[in-house]
Amino acid sequence: MLPQIRRLAETTVNRIAAGEVIERPAAAVKELVENALDAGAQRIEVILAGGGIERIEIIDDGCGIAQEQLALAIERHATSKLADEALVRITTLGFRGEALPSIGAAAKLTLISRTAGQDSAYRINVSGGAVSEVSPAPGVKGTRAIVEDLFYATPARRKFLRSPRAEAEAAERTVWRLALAAPHVAFRLVSGERVLFDLPAQTEGARVAALFGRETAAALLPLEAEREDVRLTGLIGPASLSRATMGLQSFVVNGRPVQDPLLRLSLRLAYRDVMPAGRHAVAALRLTLPDEALDVNVHPAKTELRFADQNGVRSLVIGAITRTLERPVTLGLAPVAAPAPRLPLSAPPLPSYAARGFAEAELALVAPPAARQIFTPPAPASDHPLGAPLAQILDTYILAAAPDGSLVIVDQHAAHERLTEERLRAEFTEGRVASQPLLVPVVVDFPPIEAARLLAEAEPLARLGLEIEAFGPGAILVRAVPAALKNPDAAGLLRDLAGEFAESDAPLALEARLDAALARLACHRSIRAGRRLAQEEMSALLREMEATPRAATCSHGRPTFLKLSRVDLETMFGRRGI
Ligand code: ADP
Ligand code: MG
Image (cartoon, rainbow, N blue to C red; front, side, top):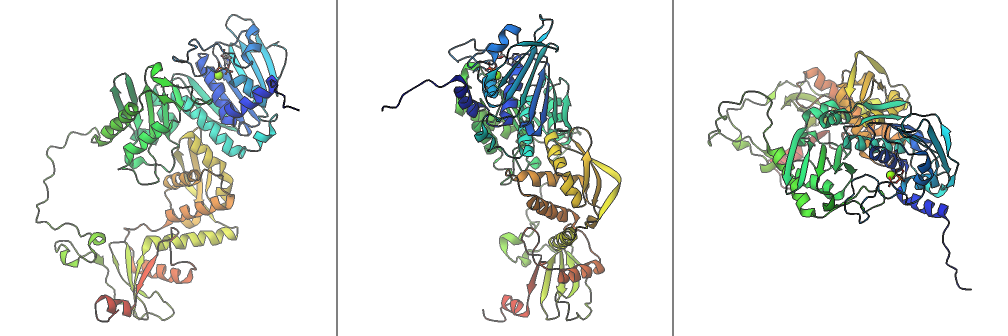
């Protein structure tokens, strides 16, 4: 028998399309918010439950869908938007007429909508492709779209979802991007129990400040450039504002939030010489160009683009960023009268040991001796293999004489970091990390999504002695810190932790996250390089190192001390052949 070709049922076709258009809750959120923006909404509210897998609700005050059009809205390839069927001039966010039928095929979709002329709202349901009658419902002007049980009708897809927390974060980030793209629209985002942001219609600068966190936004540099009919505006971070992820990068092209590879790459290239490897710039960039210079119909999800003039766009972005980064930072002070006089050439340069090896002959004699606190060592007890401290140099290294005559050089920061981490780890293993309430709780300001990410870890962090709670959108209140940390900089500590949790995209096991958090915490307690230590402090540090397993390397795997034996010294001085 020959295989028979048949037309697929409409429900099946929609399920197949749903696989492309709606691959996770974030995609459904994106399509529905785009619909609200296309409807001319001035206020959009997004409410997520269970990461959007359980429920997504989007409420807008846009033009609404007329009663007699509701059934058409959820039909495949039915759209009110595509005026130019040649697909050249696309001015709306949607145009494919695929989102609503796709969502309705994969989930339970309810639309409740009312136009200005109607005296009631009307409702329609689609559940796994089955469409209900249109019936009257209470409601004000605008549209409410409710999506429940995403992928209940397509279990194969449901299996690929990540944890509700990870899906929530992806969906939150989608709303974050859309809110940046449309600052003139009021946005409210609720995820789980939390209001992530609630923003009025505002200027672009104010929107960036609200969504990047005020402190970050205060450091941003404005940027503006034009090339033929392409215009680039926005705010970029100085290189010093580098981040562990690309999370604070937003690109908007003709009002459309995109994650375009060309724009990302251009940004990276522009920062290449000033940004440490593995770090990412902060930027909110907006590109405006004629609609016909752009193809948005590249991908069903419409997040990628094709520019007619790729090279032009790339050099516009790179050029504008490079120029902005080169601009001297003005602090609003009176200009400095005269440039500082250049050092005379005869002044000896600072010795660079790394480049020259032991360059003692060039040590500037004018420099004060960098070693201090020369002690007469008490005879080192032989049960103290790291010996007695002799001196501290550069306020960073401790020199000690070991009982066997070796010279010991300790990196005080690395050593202390390791000790603190070991102590925290021991306390944690025994389930008794002591927590120290702060006399004055500290409030730390964050981009709202990062605040949410940290707050999601509040319970495990509390087990490490760090007690945090929500303090309005984008702010976290630190109530207590691990007692072992003495007086840490709570704000810096929390920022580092946010980076630590963000760095890996895969949802790490709780242990791995706690482990990373422990190392971070330890780093914050540690004696900074550059702090003067009293002799007793140095002795205490050496004794503690001797008592601590794994004290020889810091938590980053670098050595905490070097030991030069008599043989090492004699070899280095050429008293002994190698
Ligand atoms: P598209 O957005 O590509 O047109 P959709 O499936 O997302 O396709 O929506 C189909 C149609 O339903 C839209 O063209 C629009 O007319 C109408 N619609 C959808 N959502 C809304 C909304 N929130 N407000 C007003 N009209 C809407
Ligand atoms: Mg749409």
